[in-house]
Length: 97
Image 1 (spheres, helix red, strand yellow):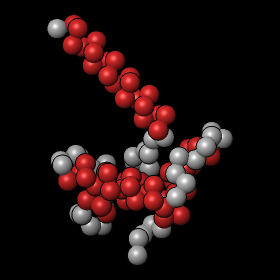
Image 2: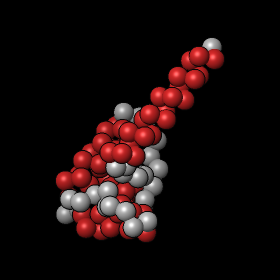
Image 3: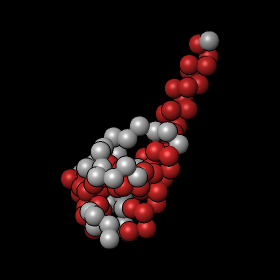
């Protein structure tokens, strides 16, 4: 059994959107599972963990990061805007050299 539960994770992830009266980012357990799996893959690939978990397994660390709000799930719009800003910033860096 997953601790914290899916519903607890969904509340943590959606807490910021509830405070801002915007649409919740996560509407299903599937979204939580996908987010945790993506973060676990990043940890496997060498990313630094933002939280300590009882177990050193990547998925346990990813779930703990979600539960403690150390990582944020972005909506499609937020992800696109962040990617666009990142690309624009790197494009300027390339032009400077």
